[in-house]
Length: 372
Image (cartoon, rainbow, N blue to C red):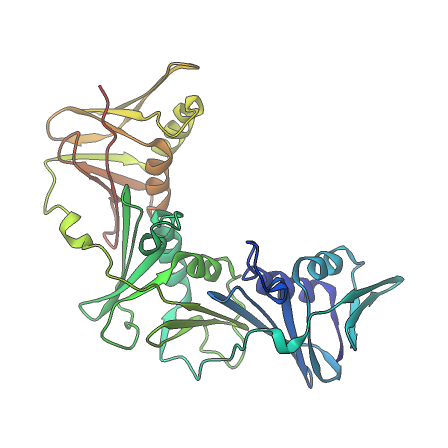
């Protein structure tokens, strides 16, 4: 195999596919590699950890067709450090030569036959708007759990609601819900539980990379019983679906709230970030004293000191004090679209909701922290 490509394009391909390569120790060294396959002037680069697979396809100057498996991190780092310009990959026997200008590297490769069989899904069955999907993923994945001991909560639920798609994620302390109104749902009647990691990788892809053959500004999606595949531009992401029954999130959504606080988003965020400076561990909450005319924020740290700040706003209901994990609250406010945010509460012990004042497609539920 032999091909030539511009450095910057090649780095992007290797780095994108390399994000699927598992960081954890594995008994199969080939999983730390990237599969390079050159056919004509098309190069595909594939990385996988058996759960997540990312494949990138791009035009190169093809010289000899063939395949090889190169060390993922090392080959990416080498190409990134090369001088700008053309880079040549030449594979022979059990090694590959990477050369550019006056640089020359010779690396041992892994046997291609040991690389897991990964193939392209037939074709997308659904097309979702790229911008709306990226925004929804940004809002929702932040609430998914990172605890592998609770695998169901590391996923994002894709559900059909009134003919459109709904995305839900929770780590049991907070929940993010986003409706993609006006979009077609993914083919099939069953809900899909997609690992949040795969959706986060989709979000990281640059927008506007749609190829001429693609449906402009759309993300293609196809799902089977145990896998979902997404296409954006020249990148294909496949991942195994999580198995199990997702918690009944609908029962957690209150019908109404008696207390409602209406604030400017950026003003509220800036105040939260300032008082958060005194937080030194995950157990120090921020207290919100809601009152007519706004809210008072307080953080009390036994080791560092105290911080307080007032934010003007409109409040309706009975005055109350409620406390939250400041990082979780900031996450929810950041996810809101628009310039104004609404915080709705029942009392100091039940879940509150953060949402935008201008749109109601996104809701962020957050459990309060009990304080004396």
